[in-house]
Length: 94
Image 1: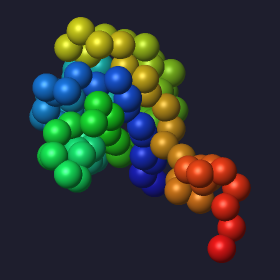
Image 2: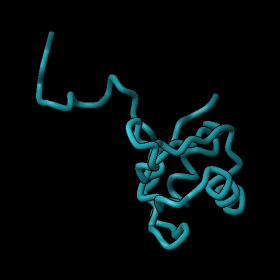
Image 3: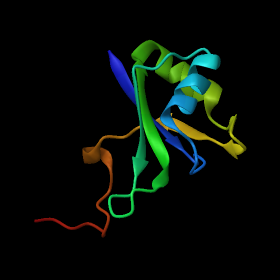
Image 4: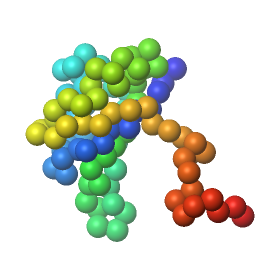
């Protein structure tokens, strides 16, 4: 099974291949990676997501959260699904 992991506090100049190599160097091969970009200007937003084996994901979060990547301290945790998040503007129901 595959698990999605949130990676925050990325340097804006970070590239997907650099981040993939960083995870691999730390012993965590990934299945996919995406760094989120702003839809309007196309600039990176400073966070992204990686997917990896469910068995490795929990160990990766514990081992890599707070580690340095290109001079920034990464925030790494299990990504929450859209249904688990709170509405952006309070408790709005339709």
